[in-house]
Every structure is written in C-alpha cells, then in structure tokens.
Image (cartoon, rainbow, N blue to C red; front, top):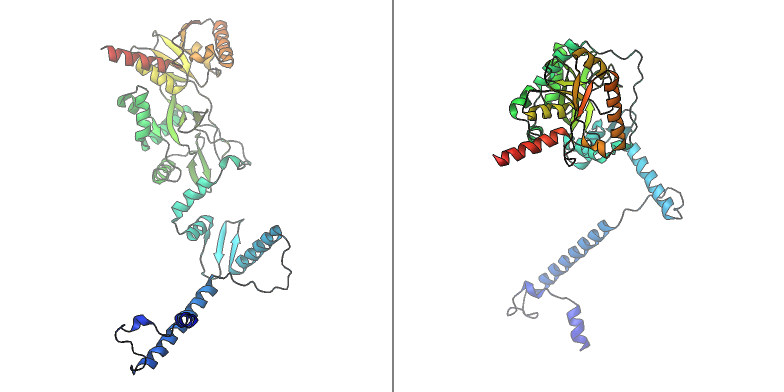
Length: 400
C-alpha cells in the first residue's frame, strides 16, 4: 500500500503526454527524453511560482539606521514623512503659486491639471470634481482693500442704455422661460420685460458678452461689473435678471431671481466689494404709471410685473424692494401726485409680527403725507397678490 502511494506522489511521467495504449517504460526508446522534458517543465513551473510569490510580497524598506516606530500612529507619521521626501525628490509642488513640476516626467501645471493627470480625466472634469468637493461655505470671504473711493453710479440714462444692451445680448433658458410661464406670463410680456438668464461664469456667452459690452461702453460706475487685471467682469449668479424700472420705464438696476437661493430668493446685481466695482441701491419699481388710474403697492419687482399682467385692467403698480424698504417712496408719491393707493402686501402680514410691523409703519407714513390707503385682502392660502390672481385666472378658465 505504501509503495502504491509513493508511486503516485512521485510524478515520474505526465501520463497525458503519451497515449495510454502506447505507454511502455521498457520498450519506448524516447522514454528517457520524455522524463528529461517533464523535469524541465516542472522546474520552469516552480521558478514561475516562486517569482509570482515574490512579486506579491511588499517591498522591503531600506535600512535607514532608524528604529522602527513603536506604535501605529508613529508608523503612520513615519510613512507620511517618507512619502513627502520621495515627492520632494521627484518633483516640485508650490502651493503658494498653485503650480507643480515633475523632475521625472518633466510635466508641469497647476492643481487642476495635476488632479486631471493623476486621475486620468480631462481638465474640465477635474475642475468640476474639485469644485463639487469644496465646501465654499467654510472658506473665508475675500476682502478687497480699496486704495481709492468706490466708483459712483453712472447717471440713470446711461445705466438704462447699457443695461438694455446687456440684456439684449443674453438669452433666456428654457427652464427660466417655463418658470415665468407658470407664473402666468406669456411670451409677449416675457420678451417685452427683458427677463434674461445670467450666463455661466467664463462660459462662451459670458466671454462674448463681456468682450462686446466692454468694447462698446466704459463700465465704470455700472453696478454688477468690476475691473480686475485690466479686464472687465460681471458678478456671476445662477438665476435670471429682472429689470427694475422707474416711472418712465428706464432700467435703474437689475435684480437676480436665484435658482437655489434658499430663503434669499433675490439679490441685487451689485459689484460692491469687488475691484473697481459699484454698489447697487435698492430701487423702487414702477409698472405702467398713468395719471388718473388706480395705483397698487406691493413688494418685489417680479411680483408687480406679474400682478399687472394678470390684473385684466389698466392699473399702475409700485413695488418696494421689501415690505420694510420705503426709502424714496414719499418723494415718488409726492412727485406723481398720488392721493389714494391700494395696499396689496403679502398675506403673511396677518401671521408674521415683523411683516405686520412693517405694514403698520407704511400706513403711518401714508397718513403723514395725506394719502388714503385702501387695503386689499384675499384668501391667505395664496401668499402674494400674484398668486391670488393666477388662481383666479385658473378658476375663470375652468368655468369658461
């Protein structure tokens, strides 16, 4: 039994190399040759197996004469130091200037190109991934120290002309158009009011508009634009522009309806705090002023535009920047000779103490200047007058 086992363990011949009927260890002249070939094959297989096992083993660290770290933390620090030293030998990384240069492959670039090279992606993809990975809310806000006074705003006529040309160079995205249509505005009113989507920073349209606009006008004193390194730029947002007009329909400034602003849905197009920038004031907005027609007052330029479009009759709307922002209102009412006004502030004045206090201050101001105020109230499930009128329009459409 033991001899049979020993016979099997000693693989004298690869039986599969000869036919079972032809196997004759005492009569085959090639038997010795086959044994030799078999042994050579086994030796090669053993050598290959040893090489494969050696490749799997981690590389042996060089003996630096230093003692091995006594705990895992020290080992981690030591490994990091060795990696830094290797990086220093092979390349140059300057974090102050945001550049790198590799001594081995001779490649150079900035943080974006380095990230792209390391991950095998394009520079554009690297930029997007890095931008998404950064929590901008934790970054310090840059502060520009002016060496000269802030640039004062251009006169209204110039601002209106430049803003009009600026908006006509832009486009309105399908998403923003649909949002305006859902508010009840048709394409004719959307086009007439010059609502436009804010271009993506440094995108094709952004670059084209800034090149053409700065070549046509001096943008000094224009809120929303600033000059840096000899080039004019615009402050960028994700949203669409709303022109804020005066009694004559001239564009005083621009508001931006933000796509993802959270509680802050609107911002002024202002470059205050930017190099050679200009601050934008909080302007009153006037829609369809005519002497002798009914005048309403509400809050928000877009809301007043929408309410006027849905009103279904000839009326004027005055919009405050916010329910508590009455700067310039007294002067405007006196100039226009308004003696009676319909108050149409949002219905949250009945539940929000701060809004209610602002509305009461408005009533006090109107009493001081001798203007009669008639309140307009509706179902509080519709917050703004535009919401109420849109619902009324939908009901009429269903009843027709």
